[in-house]
Image 1: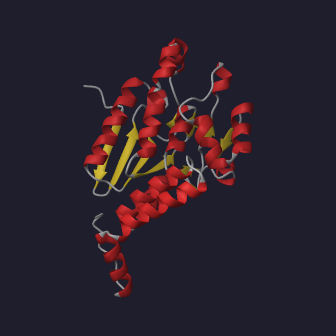
Image 2: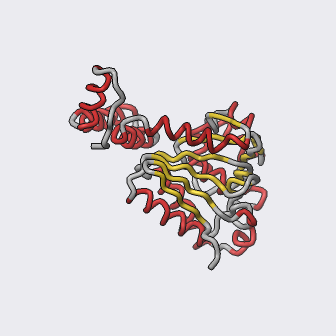
Image 3: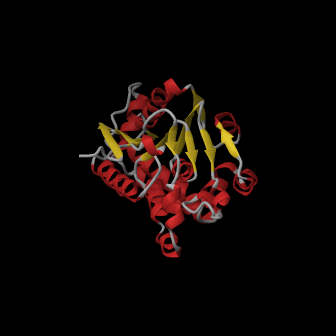
Length: 257
């Protein structure tokens, strides 16, 4: 029986999702996307607070779609939005997603990283959206999420000139928040995950929703939405526990309720 294309390891509140096609530079194909969706569903069932996404091997995070598959795709394939739906599922997932980018993150791989809430890169990472070199455009969120992360000017530079950004540029332009040596990537990603896990899980889940909503509504509407979410947290057990722990000078024992 062949190895799965997506490996899932759940460690309590933390899950590790590994795209496992190193011989194909972890390129996304339909079976891989389907396995990824199943992994996301399992993470939700396990009520994980955070999951780390990475690629197998030390050369590629995710290289995007297989070029032979792209050559065969037609209009109906684009309208089906197979990769778009995966990126949206990651972005809207209750758990916080951390991209641990180990090497090439090209095309769909860059879009996969963009769909995550936080991004950390190894010093050999390389980012790009080279779809225009194939006569197509980045269409799994690349033209929409990249400007929201790095600004319109930088996004146009990457997409309209075919630019590739190494880890240093990605950090400088705000695409990633941290760059570490390759050997330390997962340790650093786990440390970042630990900082998320230490916070109130209900607050983190709702804060993620509010942050995502901010890109889709005017400021005044966003402020109302934020207040409504805050009202939910004010009635939660986690709020009472957090305030009590602070006053009693101890670590809180959050339950996510």
